[in-house]
Image (cartoon, rainbow, N blue to C red; front, side):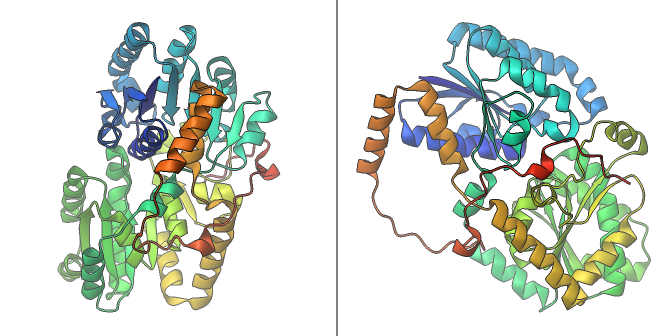
Length: 440
């Protein structure tokens, strides 16, 4: 059997890689090909185009890359004609994936969306494309199936968010943690997460660094750690830091108290007392690590003018969407928000009552959805599409016979039994309809 996987985002590459591992574990004979990134390739999938290198969003950047996307689509069409996979599995990344799904469907190849895009938030009319081109949706948020069911699409199933699988498996580097703690000198650490896309770093990096300078001026013992997704982002952030117009004493203080790191986001969040974060799936990690955070997404004024005409929900953060309340303060803005960020950080770091309220909110939302196992549930559901019930029974029997108890060191994350509670599999009625956008 042959599966075609496709993902175009760094987070999607991680989910696709974990899915590939689980599929191969359950059925070692399975052939995997597709579009993705380095993690998917390392998981044993033949990556025929590095799609994660085109992690772009917003209208102008998509248009600038239109020729490249058309070439990728033609490549997918040729692959479907020549190799005819038994199933196409798409992970997030709307836009190009609509066309890939259409190409597969036209050729009689079933298509499943794993972690489907959040069309209920910005493009509810896309439900018609879902109905035409997708055989099943494996949803990551508990309210999504009901949203689809109410609009005439019955093939949406809630399996949980695969991000919690990655968190459960993650092992932190004790040497990095020890270094961070020794450098902090018992001072509070504030994490700065400027995003995983270059455009996000470009727009959000300068105000986040400016806010750090302002907070350092009033809380000079605060330790700032900036989590860069890759080395090019780290250099961009260093250049931004050098470009800040600061008095000599403030620059000297920031140079001592702020550092930029690549590939150490989990360790940074483990020692952080608060955070400023660009909107994304990392908000789930902040939730699990119990780190109060402000969620930012700064764009030019005209970008936001267009976006406001599409956004259909009250919140942009996954944590707030699941909770249906503002657990993380949000800033989808074009204005200067640095004073707002400083005020929030001071409250979480210096006001015990405000910090307690923030942590209580994170506890509530963890109880709604923080259960691992989504990747395994997705893999079993996909294999059930490919194999007869008898074949699936044999695969499960083979897995059981090969399983051996293992002794693992305790997890280095805060993901423990207290936070691994059953999800509410019934979707929330509060998200059943279109909600007016909440942007300022």
